[in-house]
Image (cartoon, rainbow, N blue to C red; front, side, top):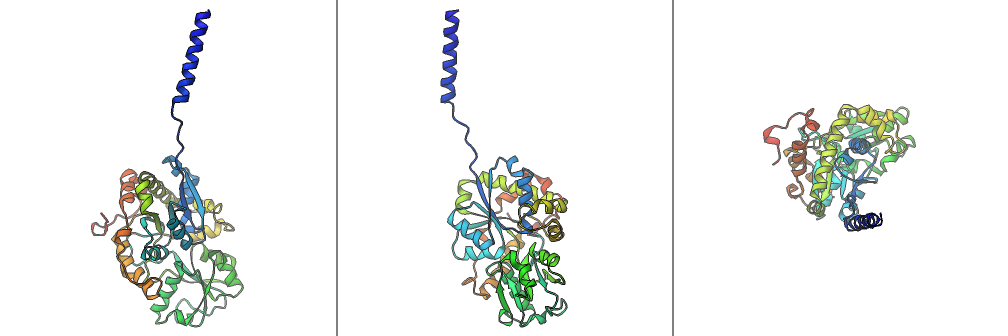
Length: 349
């Protein structure tokens, strides 16, 4: 009995020693993702709540920020790893030497160039701007978030009508304050990305849609952005992120009302009715194509130069990396099955 007890004690001691020697389970390093409170982020919010990122082994930490300007700054400082925002803040940062890299799209139709469907113009009841006569914008106060996608959009629309930004008064307005600006008559019309135009339509009596998209000199597709440093250090995590994000987009394309309900938990003060309206026709396609490159070169960059937001034109190609979307399309073809195929001459390597 005594020998058996001693053997048992030795076995227990050996097990304890082995347990101490065994390496501890290492938790996944969080992937810090910055997004805005915008309707086009419904696929991201849905992917978080549906556990799609967790299924890929990712620990996603979400940072909510007001606009792409703040997100591009956070990427530049290294305080976040991935950002979801618009074309113009992305290209502005790249032009200034910030090592940002486009690895996918958020709102987007990979078959279209130009495109501006994410932006809308909404007028208050007595704005005096007819959808059939945009020259009536002359002399009006336009609520817009300076530095974000609405500013180049209104510049492009005015250019189509033979006008410039000097023909209107731009009122710098935070996205969440757009409806208030209309209601208080601080602006005659507001220009913004969803859900803020839809919020104005549902919350401001008499407000009306002046224009949806329609900018012939705009290429504004949502950008899924990281940095060269993160690509070098965490390529597997980025690949997993794009797969989960593509799956989130696919789910939203088939469940827009449910996605709107999910988004109410992420966008303060926004109701499901407004978000359902905002998501109705929003194009959601993570794929990049030659339209991305051509759209940047032909429309986005020249517009930024003409507005003196960047000093000179540049080649955006080095800041575009298609490897993660290409890998996602191979890993989960079902996430892309409902999208129209890209013509061979529009595919990126």
